[in-house]
Length: 373
Image 1 (cartoon, rainbow, N blue to C red):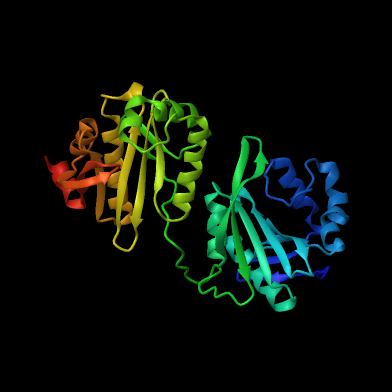
Image 2: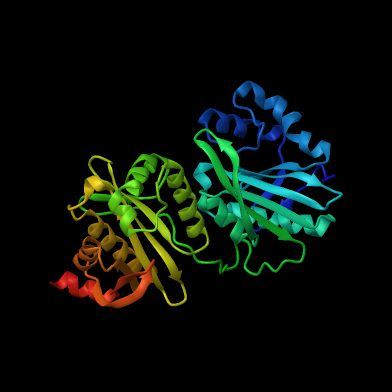
């Protein structure tokens, strides 16, 4: 059983049991509608007193975990962190956390997770700490990585939320794992990944793909021209589109690339998709791919989007080369490359499904030259 007075002090935080002294702060949180407190927390002010005196401590009394307040230097509750699903026989537990929306982005969550994990291994016989995060919850995944957890896999459709099932990224931390750089006060060299970053052009918005794109993705993937010149599944459906959303998020989390939905700024209409893939972070090179909605062809949208992506990876991420490959018979795709300033470099014979691929490259100086024209 965890100590009823379990308290952990880190560089900027104190993790301690909730108590009656937190009533005013919890009231303010409940009235504001901020969501970050542990499961079972009151949603109405009438439930605050019984929760602070009994409800929040049930997990500790059962011996299966503990809910702790995450407080800052002034003693203000800025988050919560919990241990749960503890099996003393197996030597395992799981950690979860939440930070008040006004205090996110300050590194409190990884600092708290690191501090609590260190305490668990130092003061108990537990040998493993689990952590799960929605695959599309980039911030929570970064917390796990910064705290030194190892990504171990994906639990498909493991949770059901209001918008449907979500995959979970599974992380684990073992007693004795090397966690050089874990925590808030030291540098951490995690695997590099592209952030979800919106890009804008005069006509377009490039944003993170999500479920509202399913109809547009399905129609574009099923289009005869898309089927002819890409490797999308034959007879493309919304189920394939959902698989695409999972795939691109997994690829981003693995450091392989990132994807955008391309939509018209004024109407919000889906006009295509652009993605980066086969990224080499050491050499700072990557490849761009795309598909255009049938109703948006001939308007230069995708070339405009590809150029925005190129400028972003060169200026913000220090990339040195962006590659583009197009089927030799796909003259429309070749025009996209050329209008975006790519230089034709050669032909990869039998480069894709028995067809020659025209290889294009773009480097930062090409954009300088394009801008000066």
